[in-house]
Length: 208
Length: 208
DNA sequence: GCCGGTATGCGTACAACTGCCTACGCGCCG
DNA sequence: CGGCGCGTAGGCAGTTGTACGCATACCGGC
Image 1: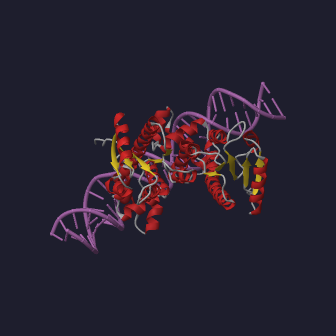
Image 2 (image 1 turned 45 degrees about the vertical axis):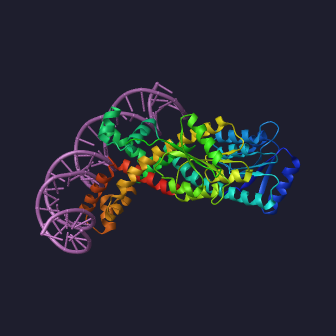
Image 3 (image 1 turned 30 degrees about the horizontal axis):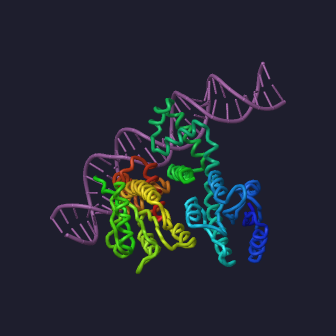
């Protein structure tokens, strides 16, 4: 379970910018990966890779904002720091409304960028820790059979076995068996824990 | 249970701006309340009042950003739309990072403001509906005695009565009584519902 | 002195969990 | 094709957990 090194993805069509940012980041011990276009990033990026994204707004082909939208659609959680030379307020507002971590207008001080990159990396680490736990629970719940899922749903609604048996049109004994399987597969030690697990998953769906 | 009319609070030190915004909002049937300063707004505003806030960034005395910070500290949820004549990107970014609903740079089209005000009002209505339910639950849970609270806590951890009795150093029968009171006062129809209620409250604390 | 919170015992009734055994249909593999 | 694993379904029985009524008791505040 070794953690991959956090990587700062730098997406900018200007080769000089990519290089200077790479050197800047390297000077504070941060690994970076320069990409020349949004498409190139989408090919390279794997959601399991911790890090953050430093993204130029204006680029040929897919723009920075379009890339951000695409990442949102894919459910990516990588923090995005925009940089731009010719930005305006509506552009910044839109980026922030779409969940950008930050939006920097050039020129900015080196230290300013480093500061925000480090905060973005910290946030990514926190997000990942939470997602990891959810992922474990999700896998367990996905190992349930369809019937077990139905029972799980009714369980977390607080329905007694007798009612479940009636609603599913099976005997109470059968419900008890499914119920026991649900508890076993989910790893929940009690109904209370099970409800917590399920609510957690529901929240992820709601916010994602 | 009559709903108060949603009000658009307009906070700007420029009397002319307040007036023109009031008229603009009135023209689309929106009630507004003009205030000349952040302090004035803080005196007037009651969290129970539905609506949104249209706020000038730059004002004598407390600035718009400072007012926003103050509202955040007080846990206010009213959506804030900033307007500014002399804004820059860092200012807009900071406002958005602090949870602003929108940030408009003058000049803007009338329709643009109306549009965003209406979205802000819609968001406020949604937020309020959720908060209302939480508030009802909170009140119920707060009516619990200290001992009942302890039992509630153990219940939502999935502990059986026998274990609770042991941990609390009391008889099982006593735990049963407290447990019954918790279910009665909370209004939960089942342990599952009770866990949901408690988790909801925990989430509110975590995000607030 | 009464009320509310806390604590306890006894007994009954219902709900939930568990073990042990049987059965059918489906898909996979030797 | 027959055996095997698995999801589904069911019966019987026994233990544990939960709900509740009835009765009793101490303490602190109004």
